[in-house]
Image (tube, rainbow, N blue to C red):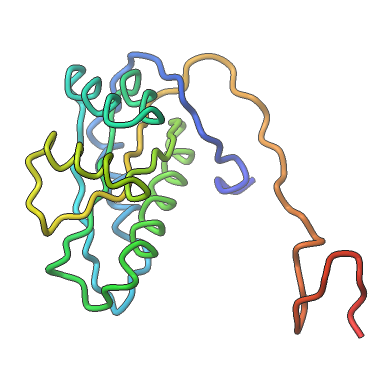
Length: 175
């Protein structure tokens, strides 16, 4: 089965470090994402130090899994490289999803922890990593080797949300 159908959010990790070659593969996968006008405005901060991971975990109530992860990726967009300024979040989301899928392929677990949805979290990340104003924090992805059994992946497919040729209210037929 393809990795996309095995992807889940993993929030508990062992203390086993993620190997450098796997970190490289995760970053390569992220940067292989499509990008509006090929702007590739992404930047990544890789965090492996336990103390720094704990600091990342404190940037948001939802970032706690970063403290237990072996590595966290801080995804950033560089405003100076934006050819299509309104597409930065789409580009970054594609990079994040590529990284998450590669994690499954490498037998790692990972979880996407939002940052761009909160000005407070973005500012905390700016201060923590001494980021210039031109770098926009987008997300934190905590990764590592999953700890303990993982729940089964369930299908999220909902055929009633698929519409052909035009939108139709749920429960009605196409003419």
